[in-house]
Length: 149
Length: 149
DNA sequence: TTACAATATTTGTATGTACAAATGTATGTT
DNA sequence: AACATACATTTGTACATACAAATATTGTAA
Image (cartoon, helix red, strand yellow):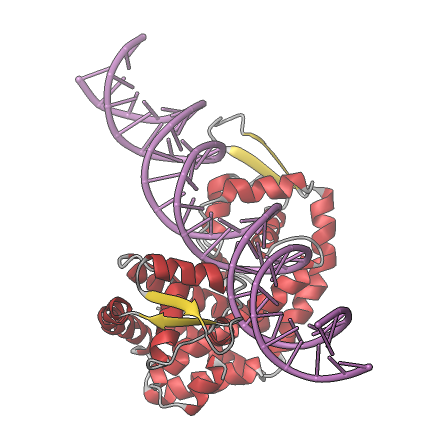
């Protein structure tokens, strides 16, 4: 029997059910996103960094900006950016004003890839949220923020 | 500015907010659990496998049972169990009736570790769910199940 | 200006994860 | 019995992640 079924049928506290449900939902969302991005040879974290770079609107991002914006603490921004560069999706050069910093920029190729991915990711997200109406989505947001803070 | 704040302040669809909130909440729960388990030299996945083994109540679990019960698809049950064995938390031997299968069992040491961890993990979970009352927890469960199915 | 602390990033090492291919064992068909 | 097929697990390889230590640059105080 799968763990999902065990949780449903067995005597388990409401608290544990909620924690488990959050994990399960996030895992499912992440897995499908992963498979979408995989077709385009890019990992979830690489995709996130690319979007951060695009959000800079031409302004270069240095490593600590990237680290700050990434959701999961990633101790390895360097190697992540390395991958993007090897795929020609980003560039990196030393910042002239402060030579400790690096300036990371998204390339045209990176922007083009995001253009392709945007609608796919949007559809992926909507395929989940479609199941709830607006009121329910707001409720869910409130409950999640409450549980987190 | 951190991504959490950007999401709050900027114009972003309700759908994206929900997806992001699920990710953020799960990440936070996972990070604190990870740090608790780390003090006892065990990873989250190793902990999950140990609990599955305990749930067998003396009956050995073979690899495909473990794989089926694990939440995130883990292609590497073998190496995960290797770690548990090297820590003397589990044992493994070939199943005599069907020599393709392995019989994995939790040891006394493994059970003792879970005894220590149980209250810690419970407190960790409650530290989140405490913030919601029973009705809200049920609501959250319903919304998450709805979004997932 | 030298020395020391602070900042920004990189590197090393161990561990964890994903996927495909390989190995070993059992079952069914002729 | 011989063969193909299915099943259960392991191994190889590449990549990702966590954490600590190392490197390089800048700012500051004696």
